[in-house]
Image (tube, rainbow, N blue to C red; front, side, top):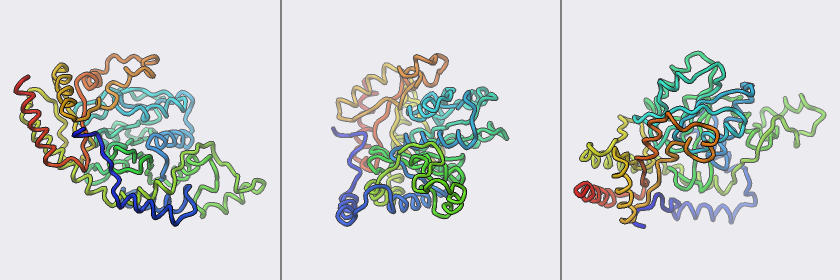
Length: 388
């Protein structure tokens, strides 16, 4: 394969750091390295608190569990969600027995159709779960204006957009909390792993409980004495303050995170350089391609292709495969056409999500994509469009 979606992002130094830790440590479950990684990621992200978990999906799961408990959601609560995203922006809402209300996407930043978002708010709406897709920041200010002074939580799924900014402020810092993924194919990797960022101390404490069975001892030590005094008849070691999960991560994965994080800004620079080159190439084919062209603040995840003609999309994707360039559908396409949702929801009336479903796909963009690959892509596109 000439151009994979992702290649081995773990350097020799990353692996040596892991080996050194294994050879010198006797504790591998969540401990001091997890805490150190959380602190360093919080500094990089520009937030007060971080909670490291075993995946970005688990991050979304305990975010929904925590906000619904903190705000005491009724059983018929609704959460507004995008029709185009990875399923785990949606499934925690369903698994928590609340109702996801799907909103069509827009073709400018791939977030919500903002007019439809505003029209969908009802007295049952308790949260808006925005996904910053493919490294493009959503129009958070517009979403905040739509929310106004209503008691609606804003949650950010930033798993594909680490380092993206809005007026210099990183995504994930605009709502109650933001989630991030360190899966193998993301901006940086701990192989498996995810992070939640928040500036709300009470929410942070609830996330810590939800991460680990609801155990009181998971809270920072400064809170222990007060809790022990409140519940003197229960052994503090096994005192459960909330229902919870076990979505902790390990010291092993945190060591990789600590090794990878210092390289993140450099990785983002390379990705964005590649995306700028991709835009320059696509300028030659404006009659055939729709292009997402953010002015600033993006942190490119992949190189997406939106063909105005779905038949040409299929031909071009086949051409890429023949040349050894791996591709994927653009996330879910119209998520409501997926079997796990189509049984319950009508996939009709999602025009832009359907366009993405039929007309779009992406190829990889990462620190391994160099000028030679970009020139090869340019040549392939020249050849293709000269024939079609």
